[in-house]
Image (cartoon, rainbow, N blue to C red):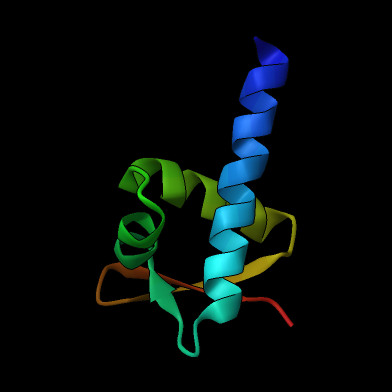
Length: 71
């Protein structure tokens, strides 16, 4: 069960990173969630974890979280 959850987490991280890599502009959590077909809260949590791992950079604009690939 834990292995299955770890695989799902890796897949979601992969989807987020690939979507951000293919985007010319920063993407909001909402736009990311719609694009990859996942719940907003799940995407937000994964983006925060990716930010802690220094894979993405996040910023807030008018109470909307935006994400970009960390270079």
